[in-house]
Image (cartoon, rainbow, N blue to C red; front, side, top):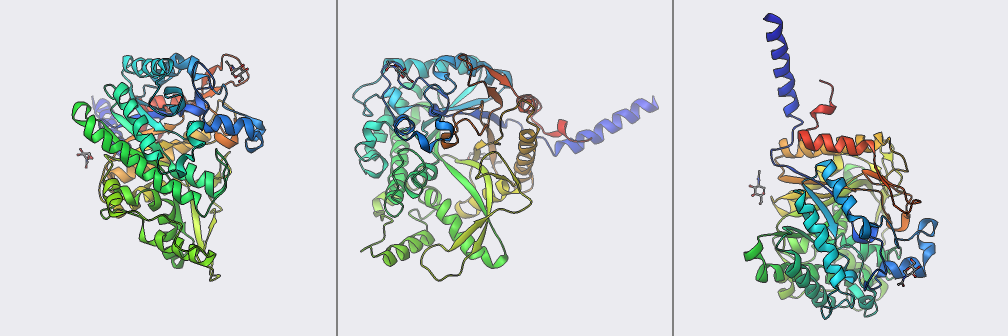
Length: 483
Ligand SMILES: *[C@@H]1O[C@H](CO)[C@@H](O)[C@H](O)[C@H]1NC(C)=O
Ligand SMILES: *[C@@H]1O[C@H](CO)[C@@H](O)[C@H](O)[C@H]1NC(C)=O
């Protein structure tokens, strides 16, 4: 009798302690992928060439081991297995992207591919049959080459082209898809392409190209959002936003705080301020930095293209939540050399552990600080983590990935419970190892390992898959802590 009571009592104490590590009831867990990284079938049926197809074929030396996504995980043929894996994990939702050139081979809405429609209908229906919600990204970096040939994201007409594409997608899929991401990580493809020349289509034009892309992307996102608002929202009640890549910047010393804030505005604000801030438009600090640089370089005006008042209104408020893609952080240090522009050096804290990807060090606190910063700048809103995950080499015993997930998820729990952040969902990047852009198949982010040497592209769960499955089943991290 007495001992039973004692056992009950200890269980109760344990339960109270655990609650700290429980996610709020109804919290949604998912995993993500992107068309070019998993689908393969690059020339299947009437699919047209996109900028990644062209890039990996014409400039193979840009990619590690001369790898490409021609076959990748072959999800174009193996989508049933992908859905089975999502079900094995018990995911509430699966995030994937639509390949524009698979659905609209001409890039324009004049021709819709039957096979493209069938493919995405199969994926969506297959997920729903298992009770898994589809979360769909319209654009994850794979622009139809035909549109690139007309200037791609630097041509302001892309705002209408993207709008037409979005309307086709919504017309066919919005009856079943309720969570949308219009454009994934514009920073990665605008800055990645034009400021660094390392992403498809590999055009280096940092002073002008980057900012044309930046402006057009914001307008294109807003166009899709307005189309949804006007033509689909009443019927389907879905939620949309764009997803931003957020690298947290931490000042090296307190004196570095001011320039660090400018660096954050340059990285995050440049793709957020127009949409989420009350006043809209470019962040003032960014306008100033680019104007200074442009002047020093001899341009007649700033190469950051101005918004008209109408454009500011058009973009402002076009969100239903904030989509957070976060992996890592950097330290920022002021370099006082008196030159125009943003005089900051980026460093890594010696305590932050490296990963398989050169840009990626582990600093769990960064994710909470980043979201707090967003709430402070743009007000209280709903946040969904749309990407977070760990980069390793090959191997099924991925304890470091489990550790990463635990630590980052704990920071999110602190954000929810101590800071009252309204975070309602979390997306692991990624369901399975896949084509990691210019890293080829060297950096592995998957919960499932993929054997890229087998024609079947065999998928095998890693230890982290088991971890994620249990986390979802219990809606809690408590099972992993010492009690
Ligand atoms: C598709 O591309 C593969 C190479 O990835 C090639 O061997 C095949 O001939 C192509 N098929 C068509 C129909 O062009
Ligand atoms: C979170 O945001 C959603 C959408 O705006 C809202 O319905 C919900 O009440 C919010 N929850 C909290 C705890 O603020």
